[in-house]
Length: 227
Image (cartoon, rainbow, N blue to C red; front, side, top):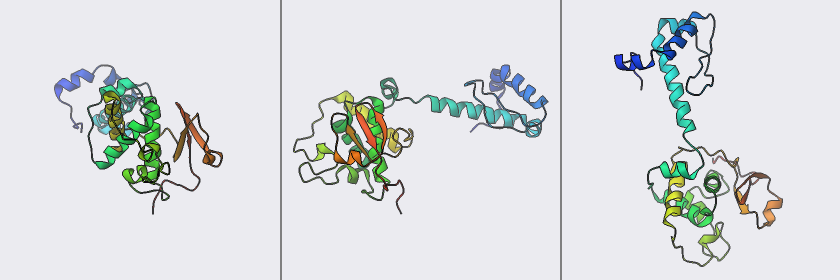
């Protein structure tokens, strides 16, 4: 949290263009827009009367907005962003999600892997599916090719032969489960398939996204809230 009164050294570092802009805003009448010197975007209106009473409150708001914008901009669906993240670890749900991403989508782009993960988490939130990540992934497992995720019922042993891909899927799983990355790619999709096939349900469900080698669909009535 930024203190109300900035230390002398910190004040000197922002006293130039930032405080000149502050003085200009205070001098104006009526609500004003504070221009973000970091991003060039506009923030919310700020009362000149509040700024006159406590200029530091305006400065605190201004800096906080800049930091928030910078944090949002730091994320991107890229290999370089993943490489910059610390090695991930977690509980059983994290282990299930990272495993599914490795065996279902490791050949996809980073964006495509995030999209597949979104589908799994969207199902967790739907009343039509199990209410845990592991439950969703293992649904139907036990009967060959009768499961929801093929790798869990194809009769083949799961072997991790690509260390780099495994680390990446672990980071993706951690980023989504922690909420560090928003689920904004698939618009609540509950199903997906590769572009090489055309399952029967693809004719019934509305397609909501096409990312990499996959098409994504939202099952009507699946919703995203459980009672």
